[in-house]
Length: 246
Image 1 (cartoon, rainbow, N blue to C red):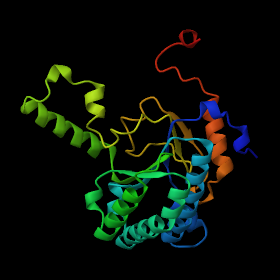
Image 2 (image 1 turned 135 degrees about the vertical axis):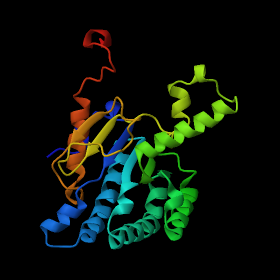
Image 3 (image 1 turned 90 degrees about the vertical axis):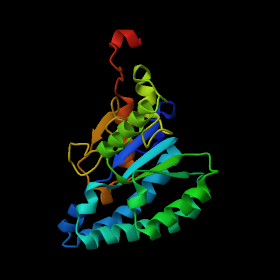
């Protein structure tokens, strides 16, 4: 079983993104309600966040609640919002201890007022931390993000703030929710599903993808280490040939 000492600290993904999938199925296998899985998934979040900070990941983004998740049963959505509030309250001390700054992307104005208030408070109380940036994707959807960026850029073109000829990747990046984050280096999805589910579609253009057949509540440190080791053994060419890289 791998541990953190097996990782090349000089080749850690700068930006790691995770689709935390499988809470509901994990609970179902145990004859429990889906909310039971979400509650145990929170424990995994704590483990992974602390491990990433120790490994040296600079940016960790977790797909916490998508725009599509609002369509789930009301009781499940309420539970997820309750867990968000309680988790943020519990983890504030750990964030500050580990020098972690909390960030968020998505349409957070859609969150219930209590969850929104708690999120803003914890972000404010960690804003001076200089270590890993933990980003929670909340009420997030990549298509909605791109749509919002197109509207904002179009308005600036209309008002002669930006010319069409000057629209490039930098302009687009600056109008995304992730304008203060680098592109994703490694994307992990748990539960065995092989899809990206409307998550960071622009930002994962050159990311390495890692799919693992383990439900999120069972994901542990050695799984994370194996994913990073797998990443370190890949050749990232960014459209070039191997010969050009050497």
